[in-house]
Amino acid sequence: MPIFGKPKFASISTSKTKSKTDKKASKDWFKCKGCSSMLERKALVELLNICPKCEYHFPMTAHDRIELLMDKKSFKEIDKDLCSKNVLGFEGYDETLEAKKKSTELSDAVVCGFGTIDKQAYGIAVMDFRFMGASMGSVVGEKITRLIEESTKRNVPALLVTASGGARMQEGSLSLMQMAKSSAALARHSEKGLPMFCLLTHPTYGGVTASYASLGDVIIAEPKAMIGFAGARVIEATIKAELPDDFQTSEFLEKHGLVDRIIDRRELRKEFSLLLEFFKNAGTKEKSTAAEA
Image (cartoon, rainbow, N blue to C red; front, side, top):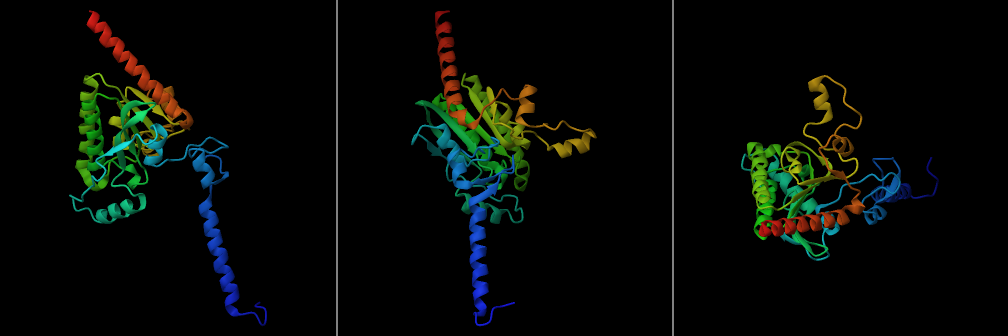
């Protein structure tokens, strides 16, 4: 019952204020997917998006990844303005592309460029799941192919950081072509004696897993990342069999030899620096042995 003498709009105003406060609180705090603990967004960013209670690795943006894996101010982006086109006339695709460009401030689902880590030069391509689930369309495939080809020209290693739902259905067979194109570029890169490393993050699926994500000289995954081709439910329905609880996790794939190592995000910078140094020294030793022969 309303209190006599109190303005009618007073209760409405209080409700609106409370609603705004609740919305702000919900943006500042959220529930961990790993342990259901309430986490503060600002504090989590400072922890590299890792839950302090259960070690669950939350997604990172492409630029946050690059900041983590490269020396400060060393990164120089290439093909920044390359954008997808709706060549098949897929209904609603133009609007989706424009919406994702505005919300992510990216031209497409991958950021590519060159820089250094502990002053060691290499090329990097980082997929960003915020842009249409980092689906692999013509531009994603083209940018990754160009990054690999440019790495080959510069005679430097390459690192591909994956996070994708698979091929981009709005581009049909044009999307599927990117699997072969990027894989061919990697073959030429390898023929020149240059290493390529893959970092598989949650989730990595579909055509990305079936192509460049599985072609690294060293394949590293983050803890508990889901990695596969088709989803577990699709596989169960197809083969009519129950799958293990940890099926398609990075731990399962490491146990079966499809992933070389699982590395905590806080150790990734150190790990890749060591890998670059190791392959550089191995290459130098190999050239020296060949010259002596």
